[in-house]
Length: 229
Image (cartoon, rainbow, N blue to C red):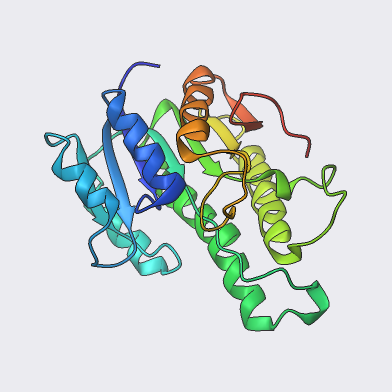
């Protein structure tokens, strides 16, 4: 996939920042979003990028902010739209999870990414790629150990919503990807995770690029292998 323009939502740190860094390294123009007005690693990347990386503010759980960013970028064409989102609020059995915690995780991990995808899809080039960061923990088939009930459920919901989206826009030529980055050493993945961001993210980008121009939805890991639903 030749260099183009990527919008990476949720790029202030960890996997999102790693993906923004990787695409900038590959010569892409990168628009990355951060939630607030504090300085982040994305700002440092932008400062060192000779103008290839720009920073936008977006809390994607706020629909009016999605609409405002869509308006600001209305004249841009995106070759890649990638939504990175993931919060977990502890390993609590589902029956003990407070309602407000359940809602927060579901809105952040499932509903808000789809709102972004729906809002920005018309800016994606006809044969461009739309991707979201999923997880193997969203796989029903791979859930043999249990735990992290709400996080798992939110990623399963995201996968299901993307399948519905793919059916609704079956005539479009966009490549649609649910990406599993592997178990990565981040705040979410924990310090004992086997992969570093530098070991995961180049594979994520390679997988995205490899499937460019292939219409339809795929659920893949950072090594390009299918993840069972």
